[in-house]
Length: 496
Image (cartoon, rainbow, N blue to C red; front, side, top):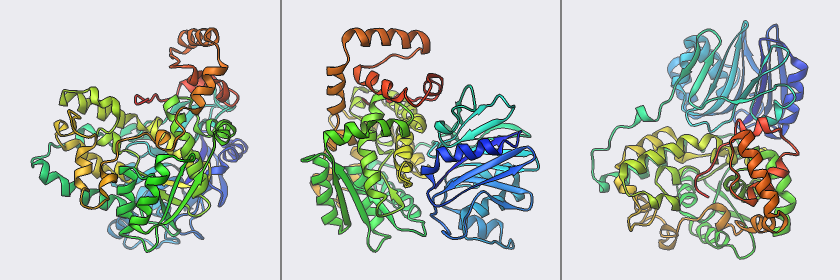
């Protein structure tokens, strides 16, 4: 896991050096810039695979790459497509270079993983982003004629007058333009079996997704809140790990801490926990918003415990697995109880899954990478996503059932009964921190102040402030980012 930045059409190496300095937190293990006649690639490295040899930007003859992410099937791709190609490292990055040289941009179709990368070859370039946008990528035009790109918004401020998010599931080839390499809708084939038939398939698909995400040359851990999703991931990760590290955070007396301790004892993990206070949250908020790059209230609320979780976890491992995506795939959010028609529920869950790239996945990426930590999300493996949406949406309707009934039933015999039946809680609520900042905002912001700002932002940016909490966050984040950078890229969670 790393951070990338670069310039296309102009060398601009000094600008790229400044860009990677702004995202140095993403790659504490090294950095580099490679300059060309019509471009420059920059990289900051978090060493996960081939710790000694996988230095970037990486080149072979006239082909260079700056890569952020993990390709879980890179060894299979090497064996199948590059059997006679001598390699200097055992990193996934080097395999990508040779696949591009052999297949051109179409090699993106072969990749199983999370990624954002730039490849440069003799003035031509390829930019690509993974199917769901697990790894971030932004770009914009500079006054010097260069096109700049980076893993985070902060690296582009001062270089571009506007910014766009690179779309998930796409690549951009300088010779042939935009191409879409993933379409969730096209991958949905209706499941032909019964609900009972689906349960073992859910389990086996998630087991495979978790096991492939244990790929690393460094220790791997798990986020363990004691909720259903993280407990499933932890259970399956234990099958491939001799001593799994688990991590939990919360305020004193929070439900997550107690449930996580129970699950740790059940799974025999090496457990770590951190208790934080309201004062800790207030002190951390400016940093949280700086790294998060959004002030959407639902995301900020959940980012707060994520921030402390990442800080704790990074002291022990470089990689950890999380339960992100389960609520989208299996209709876990409380507001989805409003849906009584299966077609409407299917449409909504597909929509919020497509929106993850600048909602929950942005929060997961930014908070982990703020501490040089890689987060992996097995529920959002493309096979797991395809299976979940192939199942009849009628099976996911709440209608008297506990949310995520299918997922609970798939693991009913594998986890403690109270964990399987534990009600859905947002991470911020389970960690005990959901209302602390909101109460502070209500005290400090007058009704008149809120009304004036709500009208201004609606008129100028077509954005409706949800509440005083949102305005509180906005005022803090505006110390770091211009409105044009925030509103052009910000996602909006529907689950607050």
